[in-house]
Amino acid sequence: SLLSSEPRPQPAKPHALLIPYPAQGHVNPFLKLAKALHARGFHVTFVNTEYNHGRLLRARGAGAFDAGAEGLRFETIPDGLPPSGLDATQDIWALCEATRRTGPAAVRALVERLDRTDGVPPVSCVVADGAMGYAVHVAKEMGLPAYIFFTHSACGFVAYLNFDQLVKRGYVPFKDESCFTNGYLDTPVDWMGGMLPGARLRDLPTFIRTTDPDDTMLTIIIKQCELDSPVADGILLNTFDELERRALDATRARLPNNFTVGPLGPDVYPPSYLPSLTSSLWRDDERCAAWLDGFDDGAAGSVLYVNFGSITVVTSEQMDEFAWGLAASGCPFLWVVRPDMVRDGGGWALPEGFAEEVGARGLTVGWCDQEAVLEHPATGGFLSHCGWNSTLESLRAGVPLLCWPFFSEQVTNARYACDEWGVGLEMPREVGRDQVEAVVRELMAADGRGAAARRRAAEWKEKAKAAVAPGGSSRDNLERFVQEIASRAA
Ligand code: UDP
Image (cartoon, rainbow, N blue to C red):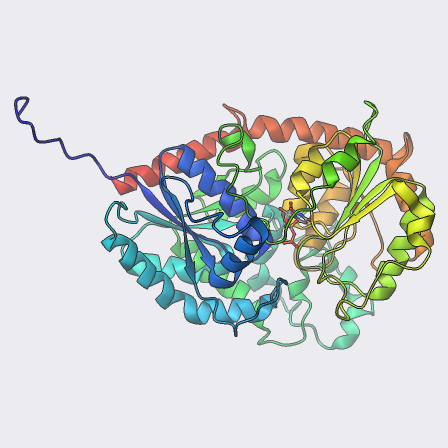
C-alpha cells in the first residue's frame, strides 16, 4: 500500500553473459557489445579465458580490470589447453577443440555461481560467439535465452551456411592435393545464394580447402551452422545491411531472427565510455599518434598503415620482401610487426640497411591502437590481411585497402572489398618486393585505381556511420535486440 514503508520490489536488471571465442578479433567486438549493453542498463558479465585475462592484465597493468565498472564484470574460465606463459596467439585449432571439451561444464558452473552471488541479478541471457556454440546448448539446457554473436562478415557466414551444400554437391573434401594447384580453386560457385557474382571456390573461406572428410574445422563449422545457429534464439552480426544486403538476405532466409548491429563501437555508446576497459592482448605502442601527427598536413592521408592482425604468420622471406617493397615505395608507413608473427620463431629482424634507407619515413612497432591509427587523418591506406574487424574498422574510417588475405574468410572479405565495395586493390599471395612497391604506389596515388578506392572508402564511411547513428539500420537492430532480451529477463 502507499502507506507501507516496504520498498517495492524492483524488477531485476537484465544480466547478459557474454562468451567470446578467446582470440583478439573476437574479444574486441564482444567488448564493444558489452559496453553497448551496459550503456543501456544491463548488468554484463564478460567471460575471458584465464590465459587471455592474464594477457590483458599484463598489457594493461595489474588491477586494470579488478574494478571493472559498476555492473560490467569480468570472469574467467579455463581454455582447456596446457598452461603457457607466452604472450602469443594460441593455436586456434587446438583452442577450438579444447574449449568445446572444457567449456560446457565451466559455463554451467559460472552461471550457477553468478546466480548465487549477492548483488548480482540472475543471468537472464547468454550471448555466445559463433565459435563457442557449445555455450548456446548449455544456456538452453539451463532454460536461458541464448544468442549467437558471429563476429565475422555476413559474406563469410553465408559461405559457412552453405558448407553442407558444398559437401553434398561433392566440391568438398577435395579429391587430392593436386586440387590446390591445378585450377580447381577457380571452379565457379555462383549457385551459392548470397555470394557475389563470379564467386569461385578460392573466394570461400579457406577452411573448405581440405582433403580430409573428418577435418576438424570443417566438422566444427558445419556442426555450428547446422545445429548451433538454429538452436539459438537469434544471431547478431557485426555488419550493416547496406554493406552486405545480398549475403544478409540469404542468411535471414535460414535464420530469420537476425540482428545486424555493426560497426559496433563508439557510435553506440557515450563518448569515451569506460575508457580503461580495453581489450588489446598486447601493449599498444604509444609512439604512433605523435609519429602520425608529423605526417598530418591537412591533405588526404599520406601514410600507409601495414598490419596483418593477431593470427597471421609469415615467413622471414615474405617479411624481407615487404620491407624492401615498402622502402622502395617512397611512401611513409607505420608497420606493425607482432612479436610472434614470423613463422620460424622470432629469428627475424628488419633487414640490414633498412632503417637507414627509410629513416623517419617508417615506424615499426609491435602492436598499436589500430582504430586510433585508422582514424588518424595522416593515414591514407591500409595494407591488411582483411580480417573482418580490420576490414570494418577501415571502412568506418574511410581508408582504402591493399588486400593480402591470409586464411579463413579473409579471402572472402578481400574479394568483396575489391569487387563489390570497390575499396580494395588485391595483392598476390606470393608477392615480391617489386610488386609490393608497385601496388603501394598505386593505392596511394592521387589518381587511377587508388584514388577510386579512396573515393569509395569515403562513401562507405558515411554509410557505416549512418547505420549506427540514431535511426540507422544497425542502431535500430541494436535497440530491438536490447528490448528483446530485456523483455525476456522480466
Ligand atoms: N588490432 C589492434 N592493434 C594491432 C593489430 C590489431 O588493435 O596492432 C586489433 C584490430 O583493431 C582488430 C583486431 O585486433 O580489432 C584484429 O581482428 P581482425 O578480425 O582484423 O583479425 P584477426 O586478428 O582475427 O586475424
